[in-house]
Image (cartoon, rainbow, N blue to C red; front, side, top):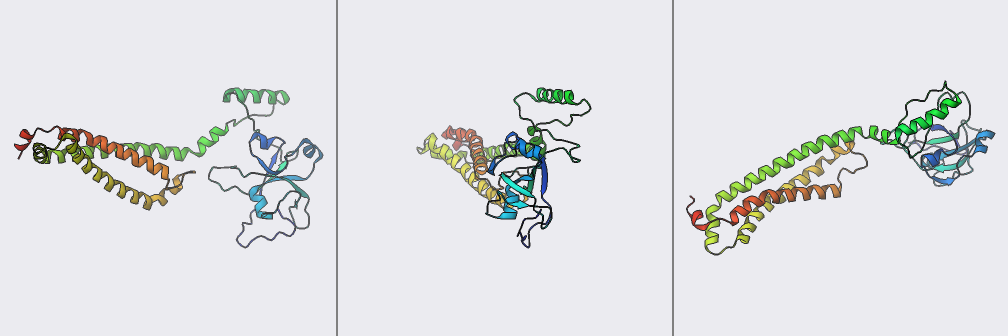
Amino acid sequence: MVSPGFVPAANAPNDSPWVAFVSSGYFATMRTPLLLGRDFDDRDIHSGANVLVVNETFARYYFGADSPIGRRVGTRNGVYDWEIVGVARNAKYTGLREEPPRTAFVPFRPGPWASGMVLHVRGAASNAGLVKSIRTPVQKLDRSVPVFDVHTVRDELDRGLLRERLVRTVTSIFGGLALLLAATGLYGTVSHGVVRRTREFGIRVAIGAGPLRILGLVLRGAAAWVVAGLATGLIASWLLSRTVTGLLFSVPAVDALSVAIASGVLIVTTFAAALIPARRAARVDPVSALRVH
């Protein structure tokens, strides 16, 4: 499409805008708000008026910051026979990762392009009940018209997020296994350290150190492991964040909340794993400990 006086930028895409034939009520059904102007009405459809509703990308491409309402566009230079009456918010049309293309919405009316139709329905019934409520009146009008490929917006979202959910499931499983191995390894390391320091703990208890002091010594050692591990993990995750950007949708590669939750889980798991050997060290018998070589 072209507009009077419009000169595309040197790096602007030169592909044609998308054109969608829609009936009145389409934007309300899809809950796509109109930012400027108005929706189509029955007069536009029955009178054959050449009016358009365009999306934000279309309006910004041709008119910049100016209002496109009342402006005219056409399919060739010198013939500007379509008037813009509304601007709709950008929406996803074919996939969740797409950049919204320049789109012009035209009032749907009978013609050679009307061999097929996508019917959008908003209802509170279940999917099966909704299909029946659609198919029955259509077949009453014309039994030769097939109704097929009926699915919900939720179905579309599930298809679009299939890869992300598969990756989430796999990484959650391996992440859980890694956390279990880390906790087991930490428990073994701390337990081994407690055994090696049994004589030291016995001496400390003999000269007056209480159980809480011994417990604190063991947990501080575990805390040092936590700090070193978290520092290494955070640096590595930051360096590798770019490699996972393509696997994420609407989530930044470095998300502060996710990092905080993961760090909190690791800290709690670490101290839970260290608590058993720490309590064992706090209850050490000094006489038996001094006999350990």
